[in-house]
Amino acid sequence: MYRQKGKLKTSSGGVMRVILNQEEIPKKWFNIVPYLPEPLPPPLDPKTGKPVGPESLLAIFPEPIVEQEVTEQEWINIPEEVLKVYSLWRPTPLNRAENLEKFLGTPAKIFYKYEGVSPPGSHKPNTAVAQAYFNKISGIKRLTTETGAGQWGSSLAFATQFFGLECEVYMVRASYKQKPYRRILMEIWKAKVIASPSLETEAGKKFLEEDPEHPGSLGIAISEAIERALQSRDTKYALGSVLNHVLLHQTIIGLEAEIQMQKLGLYPDYVVGCVGGGSNFAGLAFPFLKRKITGEKPHTEFWAVEPEACPTLTKGEYRYDFGDTVGLTPLIKMYTLGADFVPPPIHAGGLRYHGDAPLLCLLYHHGFIKAKAYSQREVFSAGTLFARTEGIVPAPESTHAIKKVLDIALECKERREEKIILFNLSGHGYFDLSAYDAYLKGELF
Image (cartoon, rainbow, N blue to C red; front, side, top):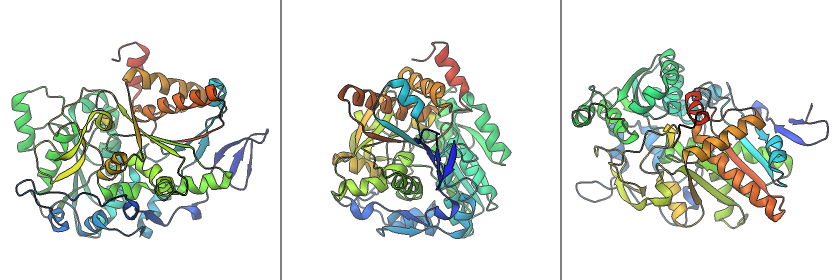
């Protein structure tokens, strides 16, 4: 292999990897709001049913975050302090899965944006670093949050180290038991990690009284983290997905991918990502979706992939619902399985949320995005094949995207179509080997 103009090539000339220089890290985040086909339905006060203003969010978020949540500006500057931390791992590589292509015998070209190179091993630090910074400059001392599989919790713990903040993480009990190494990673970065539901909050006590062995859910963990944030003026809450500002921060993924695809002279026919709350999918897809919405590139298909155990887009209702289980948040319009939904304790903990990002849901509702759900066995089979051909063990969440990529690639084989497939490999699975062990033993449902 040899390097040429930022690309890593094989001796036969086929591009295997596109690596940007640090000067090419995007300096602005992209906001898709100006391109929506209709205005985003406003959050509602559950007591009055009337729209709530930005001031209602200030109880749990700092002012700069609230401003980003409601802004209609297309481009938002990334602060230098955030870019400095980003440079520890960004830009991330765009890899071609040529070995997988050969195994499948497909004429399609498969590319993936690999976010697992970040220190916590996933895409989540893209927003964690930004949120930690904006809280720091707002005088906040402590952040509370929830986490499912632990990718978000470990990312926030990592980010707070750079800005001198305390971090308190409510980890869904099922994942707390399944993924001890994620907990240890958070504790290395000085976070306090609590299994949720817990005895630390009134919300947690309520669910433990009903079931002392309650497996927990992201909705419950969110309730606990928000309750804690509301108890102290120097404490705020940080959310790892769903809200507009989170998706905004993640667009650095797609913006880099655009540059990398341009260097290859290619444009994706398919853009694929797994969806729990929607942040990694939106982060890759939104910069490309802009061109579909405007009609510049109408042919590209966007696939949001979720677990059959928590099929929010494919089986949920598009309506107003609480973002948490107890009902501490405003009502937001999204595809939802119900705020009281408790999913089975599947290994893809980051995809066990009862709703999805309102921005993502609106675009799905208007047909700009398609959705597909798969079983645990199907996605771990896909993830294992990817590991055996490409060498990287993908996070359980990312295996959902890989399964859809395999299906598309085989369809291209049947139709003899040389399509371009782009997906987000949102994290590695090296803290999730127990899940792969269960798959290899035939224990997954």
